[in-house]
Structure formats: C-alpha cells, structure tokens
Image 1: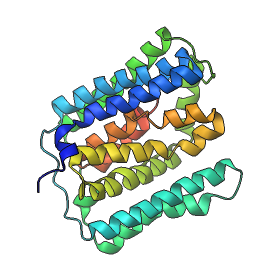
Image 2 (image 1 turned 60 degrees about the vertical axis):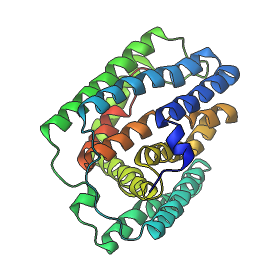
Image 3 (image 1 turned 45 degrees about the vertical axis):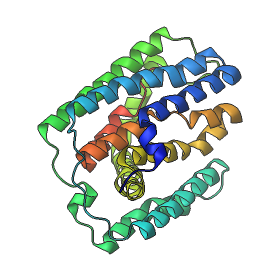
Amino acid sequence: MKEPGFFNNYDSSVVIGILMAIGLVVTLITAGPGEATRSFLAEAIILAATFAVARQYLPWKDAPKERLKGPRRELILGLVGYGLLVFGAAESFRGNISWPWLLGAMLLPVIAMVSAGYGTRAWGLRMPKPAEIGVLAVVILLVYVLSRGLGAILPPRELGGAAGENAIANALAFIGNNAVVLVAAAALVEIFFRVYLQPRLAAYLPGRWAVVVQSVLYSASFLPLYVNRYPITYAAALVLVLTNGVLGGYFWRKTGNLWLLILLHLFAFGRYGL
C-alpha cells in the first residue's frame, strides 16, 4: 500500500528535530537558557549520538513480528489503557487513590495479549544476540558520558533540580534498594508502549512514524508529573523531549527483544548529573 503523501515527503527525524526545537524555543522564552540547553539541546545531542550508534549497528531490516490478530480492536484497547494511565497519574499527584487506574492501565495490554494467545515473538521473549548486547552497552555508556560531560559545561538550571555526584549516588542507591520493583515497572512500561502500542500503531502508520507517535504518547504520559513540579508552559514543552521514547521504539523495531528494552529503560533512560 502506498504511504500517504505526508509520510512520503517528510522524514521522521526531521519532524523529531522540529518538535524538539519548538520545545527549546518555548523553554528558552519561559524558563531561561539553563533549562532550555539542559532539557533540549543536551537531549538532542544524546539522541543524535545514541541513535547514530543504534542505526549503524542494529539490523537494517525490522525484526520479524507476529501477525496482529485484531489491530483495530487492540489499538482502541491500548488507547483506552493510555487514557487510564494518564488519569491515574494525574490522580496520584492530586493525592487521590490512583493505583487501580495505573495497575489496570498497565495490565490491560498484558491481559489482551495473553487472552489473544500471542506467542513469544510478539512478547519479545528471546535471548539477545551478543551484537545487540554490545550496541546496548555502547548506548548506555554514551548516555552516561554525554550526560555527565554536558551537565558539567552547560549553564545551571533556573528552576533547580538535582545534579552532580549526589544525584548520581542517590539514583544508584535507589535502584539498588528497589531493584525488583523497578525491573517489574520497567517491564510493564515497555510492554505497554513498545511491545503492545507501537505495533498496533504500525498497523496504520509506517514503522518509523509509529515510533514517533509512540514516543510522543510516552513523553506525554509524564505531563501530570511535569505539571505538578513546573510552570505549565515549561511542563507542556517537556512533552517534546522525545529522546527515550524514540530510542526505545527504535530498539524494539529493530530487535523485537523485551529484555533489551528493560535494560535500556533501567540504564539508558536516566540522566547522570545533567
């Protein structure tokens, strides 16, 4: 089937760049150069570097995927789950009971896939190849080095926020003390956005655009957190920081491996001292 005109004429990387540039300008005007450079310029550099490695050394062809059994029904179900997820997050930051909404949202795609009888390929349950692990290791190292280096040379944040050695030590201590919970949470998030939602979007969009849409939805799911912490304009602009969603979506598209996504989520989604 021929792709719609927009998808033929615009490369997804250009659109990602434009979206992040809009966020940069908005943040520069409303929150100052420190926030703008750290939240967008630094993220653009990290995305460009890590994506260059992933694109160069991961397979050029998409990983084989199991055929969807009801793409329209399953996509609608996923979007309902997404609505529950955002609602639950908003209720959490209002101080209301939120765990039923959040748990229901996270388990909805799991229940849908189990009830539909999807096999291990659809879940991404295979051992990673050594080359894939190598690419993942380089990406994690790049994120660490770049976030540390950029954090040291860029202007300070106008709105505050943890940075430096204490933030790194606190983050590592938190991971160590909550490893089981964090792995389970990372697995559920990756299953929801990458394993479940992205392939259903790809049933109606070219693969690269499914990655972009998924990454926007992933980033937007943090909006209740941003609104709770920052002025509304800056909070809205932060939705356009697409680094992690794009990288996770690309890894899933090219490897189809859930274990790699979990490791990526745990060790490459953080920013160390930035």
